[in-house]
Amino acid sequence: MTDMKAAIVREMEAYFGDDKKRISHSHRVTGYAEELLEQEGGDPTIVAAAAILHDIGIHAAARIYGSAEGKYQETEGPPIAREILTRVGFPAGQIDEVCVIVAHHHSPGIVTTTNFKIVYDADWLVNFGDEGLRERYHGPDQDKLPDVINKLFLTESGKRLARKIYLEGKG
Image (tube, rainbow, N blue to C red; front, side, top):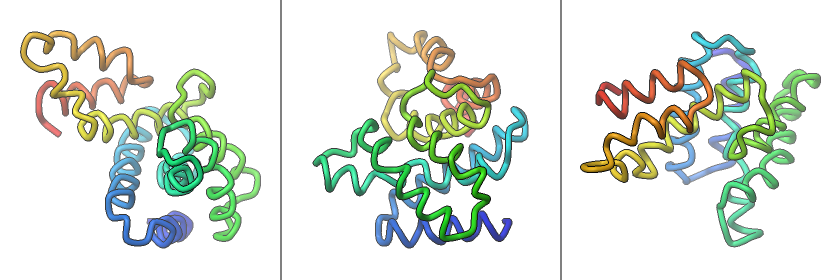
């Protein structure tokens, strides 16, 4: 782990404190993002920082709006991410791109960069199982699951990995 990535992880963990669910989610998304990065290309520095910090606004959203809904995370996350990245000495010219990804990580289509697509897909690789989507498409609806994966995921490697995990059960 690079020193910069380790510093961002420490800041994220300190920010979330005792919220083990958020910390675990961030680590899982980062792991998938790094896996997708190998196949999709992209900037490892941007992708790692954005994956680690993508949900950093969730506590502020809940406190301010009484909801952790994605649109509120997207509003509250970028200023917190910017503060953390500035504090750890993240390259100033790259902070904006990380914050743009954090600001839209629930809104595909607004940002179309490879870096965004990797973080978006990595987040869905975790959320797909956590939100019970696999179970929703069980039994008679099971044949719809491949179409859902094809529509939901933005990268070919994300689609392949989702099929492997959620259709073949090899994740």
